Image (cartoon, rainbow, N blue to C red; front, side, top):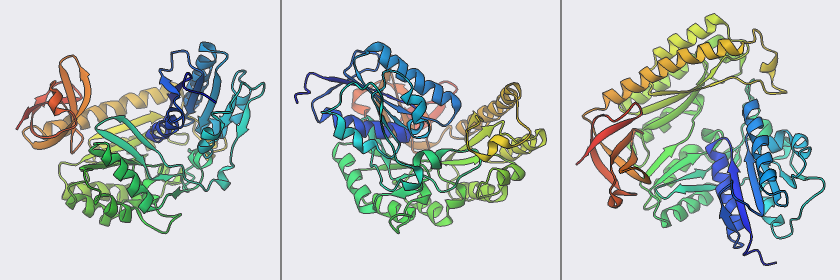
Length: 433
């Protein structure tokens, strides 16, 4: 079947892992000479990789599906991702959808491309979360300076508010030797930085009798990859061994993303997190002792069911006591079949908004203080290919966004710089050394 005159469009919602997986799926099409076009263009295939972390994510997923059907009713509509895994019947009821692939069935997409046709009733390929055992490798190379490398999938934690174990299954991974080969392929393309990605990264190795620390030690041996950043790390799995290694290994950036979710021990216990505030704070202090200029971002859920006003005040005071650089916060959304749905008290939308504004002020202050502390520091920047006006951007080793006048020669180069001061609220002016 000649597919060279066909076109495909992709739409991805949710986490970096989804984007990496869409990037890999896109190669299923391009290897068959199917041209990739923008999602708002007429295409023969539309693939929507969905998210289900909140009810709003479900809504956005449905809207994207509807947009594709409206753009070309004759196109083959393929839906995959977490929403497709958790709510396949909802998607099946959307007239015009042809194929639904659960979160663990993405590799099947390649098998139907040549033989796909419009369906009267959507064809569903899905695996129960208890039976998800295969690992779908994925790399995203959206910018030619960095790539997202998926090393792990799934989660065994079953936190009270979360559906990820049902959407992505239990923790599993490929062998280290296979992941190293993928990193070597990234290096061959001239990409200098890899972001190590997964659902619960430090849980790596359960399915292969290896450890995340073992993986780090092998990845840093890959020639021509000069930088690694590590995605979100659960605080209870962030060992002193890993922190010490990051502090002494120049290839791994002093950049941490550690989910807190709540700064109240009562709430942490209620939502079945595997640490308390004492352990969390000890990790932050250990990092800052060894890497004073490290960037530390934390996650926080706003307005969890069961979080009292007193719990929230405890959270705010605890966060204020932490030497962190940024707070990624999001408002709690009830997910079906999770224990937190039944927790009391339930927080009104108005109260969630009020609490979010308080957290936002703390976040902005923390980020400003961190950036101010870096003025005058000599750091290294990897410049990106993106351009806005006559300006170009890059990130320091400790994840400070910097701006300078555009110079094509700087793209994908690691350059020594000095931080001079603020360019705007989010980025800094520099002097190239």
